[in-house]
Image (cartoon, rainbow, N blue to C red):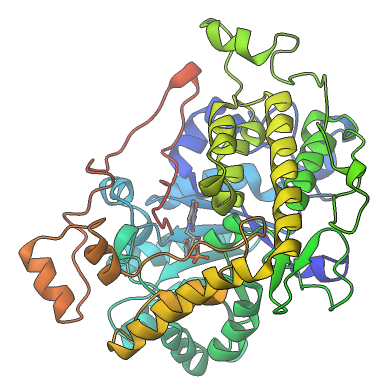
Length: 495
Ligand SMILES: Cc1cc2nc3c(=O)[nH]c(=O)nc-3n(C[C@H](O)[C@H](O)[C@H](O)COP(=O)(O)O)c2cc1C
């Protein structure tokens, strides 16, 4: 993105559990790091020593930032918000989390029946906090009810309302599509100055403009689309201006190369987390380059940041080795599995190498990057040699989509798969199968009652929903003595 266009971006922290945040210093310090010395007291930004300032909410690299909490206690919410208010631009309330853990803890979308409590939570911060309070909701059963609910949230003092266009029951295999028409209804019936962010169905860059147009929202939020394709907010370069980071096929469709994004991701970590210059890298390969320029290994002999000198194999055997807990480094593997999804499903050796990477073992991640660069080079050359091979693969999906339309399955994800599909070395979204398709494939099973509801196009109950056959339950993981709030589950939509 250009420096100008990146000014349009706003980031939210992951949802933090307000009670754990207020009660446990280790939880705070592992989940929000505006200072190196930790958040055991409440720092005022101006008073932070420049050398003590760290990444979260840092005015030079991490603003604007909204910190999001889940809670059902106005007092705990305020106390948690006071810790972070000097390091963010607003404090958000997650009223959208549909997971079993939120049901058990009575927060997130399970507060949407208790409008009085919702009002009190938001109003407490509106009255007492120095920065604005905002809220994220899901839509309710009807447009009218959603509008009434939004009015409660706004009248309590929320400065911005983010609306996820799915109902609470729409999660996991039952996620389905977000309903933008409800967002349009809110836009048309709330005062014109109300700031609305739309959420749901943002898979590709072009969806952003479409969503703003259709809903009349002031901004869009993207979570999953952004995880699979971190370039989602970047405008594609003009034809002929692709450079080395963007790839465009002969049909004009393209996207940013995974090896390019992986490199940038690594380099951000070197710069901001490891605080060491990134390794010198050869320019990304283009088939028009001389063949001897094919990239070999990226950064030989780099030190592992978490525990130094030992090679990763040896450390694997050492059960007493200290586990790396830096949130920036722990997030690498899941981030990269999202980014590289289509590439690793084809190159399973790279999938296995990534699966073996331990948090903090930068050498191992650099090795995966080298593997990704090598197969990308091969893929680019293969495409140049025989583009029709790749176009045939799209064709198969087009035919399936057309067949599905003919059969009257108007709600099919195949058309979207077809629109999004790119060669495996290009960043691309993952298109979830719709609930009916998940049922057909057997990845979702339903009780007779819910099956009947689905046939009648009703929303299915989430009571019986399980993830990978396991019921969801509240859990506090105390590995390494570091309590963690349960993280949103892979394949679950949280907010
Ligand atoms: C891995 C993951 C983690 C999420 N964590 C949060 C969260 O902490 N807070 C929140 O409000 N929503 C969270 N969500 C939900 C998203 O904000 C968003 O409402 C939902 O995924 C639909 O938007 P999308 O289609 O852009 O993904 C999460 C979603 C995913 C996939």
